[in-house]
Image (cartoon, rainbow, N blue to C red; front, side, top):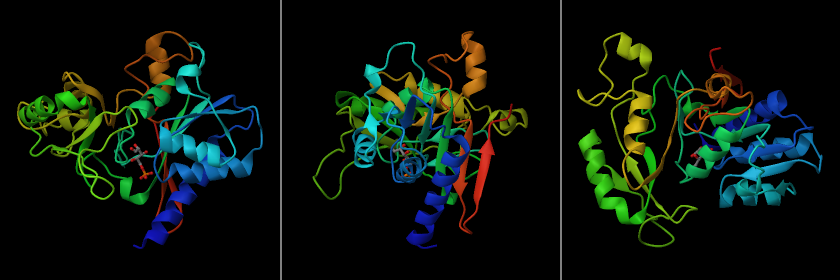
Length: 281
Ligand SMILES: O=C[C@H](O)[C@H](O)[C@H](O)COP(=O)(O)O
């Protein structure tokens, strides 16, 4: 499959996601990072010229995409405390059948998670390579954002958790040394065996708590997040929008630890079609 087809698939996914979910009367819209989100912004630009909409970026690249499209950005930390985003769009590196996602392939995950959790509706767009049954099927590692001083400790802890060869991500071309995130932190890429979901545990495929070498998605996310030095982990799991709202008890307000998962993922397929995976209600 050529890159041209992959780009067409990303564009088709972005276009369909915007057609289905973007409301031109929205007040605040979150915009994620990466190469696929560019097509979402392209489609938004084509569908609306409403100057009242404020777009919330998830990092430097995301802000540039917003500004270059002639849209108006607003910093995440300028949002009033009680203001939810009407919707957030973002890309993903891999998505499983429960809509759990791996993110951070482009070194953006912390601000993406903040924005996803703040959105009433979170929608992902991706090409067909990202559509898998379980995480870590095709995408090889979990990206983890860490404080620079903590790198040796976190690498060691990840090996203890069962990651075979976690590595500090480096920039190979522009400069030698570790890659820096928008927060001036570093990224560790940690491989683990394919991640289980609840039905795998029920079917006896493993304990999922690391004790037998298997990990369930949420348990691994929690275990990595608990390591001192870890700012955020590139697993977006737990509950998604409507369930998360129910847990918080406040309509339209999500808890801090839930609502990271999209309610729908749009996959651009190699034949030009778009497949949609939605959250089970
Ligand atoms: O770090 C980057 C973000 O999580 C991206 O959304 C993710 O890597 C998907 O990027 P792309 O759309 O380029 O495949």
